[in-house]
Amino acid sequence: VHIKTANFVISNSEVAKCPNELLPEYAFIGRSNVGKSSLINMLTERKSLAKTSGRPGKTQLINHFKINENWFLVDLPGYGYARVSKKDKKTFQKYITDYFTQREQLVCAFVLVDIRHSPQQIDMDFMEWLGEHQVPFCIIFTKADKLKPGAIQRHVTEYLQELEKGAWEEAPAYFVTSSSKGMGRDELLAYIDGINLD
Ligand code: GDP
Image 1 (cartoon, rainbow, N blue to C red):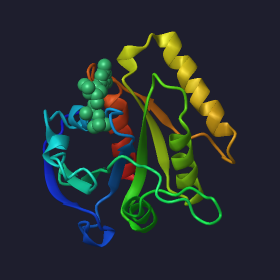
Image 2 (spheres, helix red, strand yellow):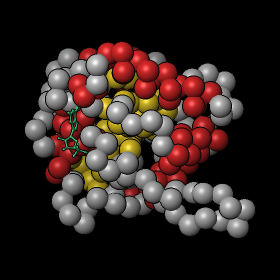
Image 3 (cartoon, helix red, strand yellow):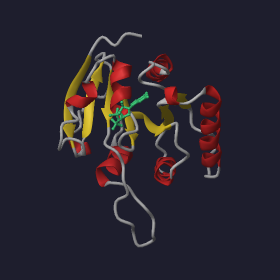
């Protein structure tokens, strides 16, 4: 699949200032260093698309890229816990929660996790938050080239089992990727295209 055009459109910290075009939108999010910039560059076949907005000071922003003039790829910053509320319920930064609760164009959130690590509490909490707010999401496992196939399968299973402990009707779809090997690219783009066709 060839990406004909991939253009940076705007960075901002407010959902209200995101582009108002009604194009389907796919958001990429994960803890820093998970391999998000590498994945975005691999998907779009651009060497440094994600870095365009990754300048120092630009990291805490919602970054919109228009792909093939027909969908938006949104590069979101790494999540972290905001303050703990009275009920002792952890929450995430406001621009992130605002984005997911308000952005009507959003079709799917891709939550990136490093395949080498066991499920981390913050990632599970974030997926649970998405579920509670009825935000459709998929998991993208990154850096699969670092593990042998058997270990990949073990880690994926571990994640899915951890997710099953939550109140899920069905497990989310997932993709096993490696940016350095181009692994998972066709599957991800087909998934995005497939949803676009509906
Ligand atoms: P970001 O902070 O989530 O945008 O992560 P980056 O894309 O900057 O990647 C963080 C580090 O992981 C860098 O050193 C990358 O070279 C490395 N990395 C990213 N993707 C892969 C991958 O698919 N395979 C391997 N082996 N390393 C990767």
